[in-house]
Image (cartoon, rainbow, N blue to C red; front, side, top):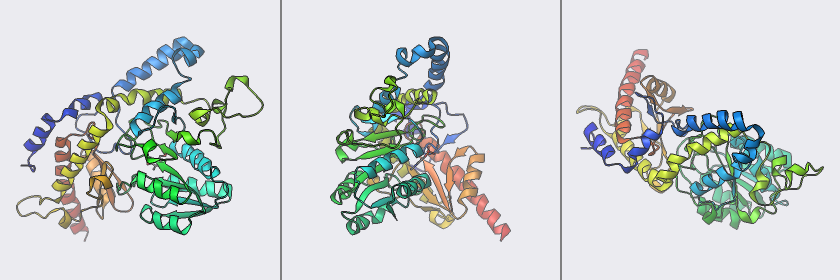
Length: 414
Ligand SMILES: *Cc1c(COP(=O)(O)O)cnc(C)c1O
């Protein structure tokens, strides 16, 4: 019986991914359903950082740039993330924040279509994406059209031949809705545009094949499903066909063809190296590199399969009546917002509740880490790499307790 804790425990015993949970330093008594905001600490990271700081920096000093591979780290780690998103070697670089990489990528995308006056931006995207698209439009004198992903097709038809860069979010950070990257990119190309994808909620969560999908440029976050830690550097991907013409606005010396010539003029490096900026944030970058190991070992496809199972399980539990006389989820003011179809959703499930911020805070107090997004959305991230069926069972039981209390408090308050 699914509605018993024993059933959940049995699933965990039979789960081939359960061995990966011990690769993360999850505090006891805490259920981490927030990995889409800040992934937990991989156990390998503290030792890796200790080695980098004490041994490499402390003893090798400047020699570490060559001896310890610091110089190559942005493209080396880029290749490892590339494998997780379906990018061939030499197409992904790691560095800077997602916000900075968005500026870099969207500007370069618009410059690939110099005579196109329209820049399109996904209006459901994370705010920083929207703010940066607005800034790029202002800087380059482009007309900004904001549209929800669901209406992008129509915008592309209306502005066919006028659109240059189009910035899309792969997974809606609020609802968890997943868009079809391959089909959307084909539609963008049919309109003559350049597809820039924000993969922040997709990289490491959903099997991706950016090369095969024909994606032009992509950007993604290092501290969500990649568990790189707070402030982990972001990544930028560019299809190989654009490397020679990619005119990135951030022309730092590490992107120079011959950085140690200290030349007067910027000459971009060939290949993805031109997307390097300045001196990388080595400590964060190498923490991210160490963090990738469990995900690489498990494989994104296997993690995804389990995450989907956990999501299905959670939505079924939420819909169940709480006891013989109790009401199912929909009668407790809860509504599942995330699409149920596997090919339409990322790895977090979003529930709507009028008092979501209060519910999330009460869950946190009881050791269930979720978050809320205004005005009424509660997000639960089910990363199969370290979340178990028992976690889901316990989290839903706690959610029921919290909802009972919240509704009682609501009655008292009138
Ligand atoms: C998390 C996230 C970001 C984060 O940007 P930072 O520069 O790292 O703060 C940006 N865009 C999307 C879509 C995200 O999910």
